[in-house]
Image (cartoon, rainbow, N blue to C red; front, side):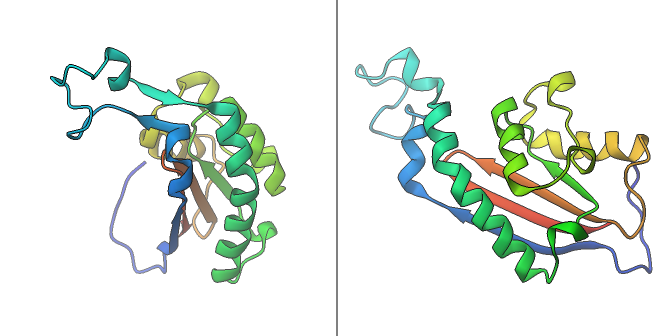
Length: 161
């Protein structure tokens, strides 16, 4: 994949992000700050490891993800059928299955999770590179980047390729 200047109307067309802090305890590092600082005697080794309650997190995010994507596409004046390629954050197999609730067919979704595992935010450029090498992305395509993060946050970017 190569970035270059162009006269075409390409690039990020819309971005949005929402956060629900009430889900923070479902996916977090408990250590850090001054309450559980690394040298504080009450801080345990476990406090400095990532904790996630996967099933509870998926139950929390599922309805929010569907509503978020509908609002996002509406803000873009697009329908789901206008999306040429969905590039999700490759967080987990469960999240990838959750994407089916959006109604995007698997042939329009880039899934590199089973080859590369969770590469955090690097999954976006990695998946875009795979899509380009496989000929699944071409100039003028509407590409939806969609991700989640601890906290819980959902973010999306609409890119005109």
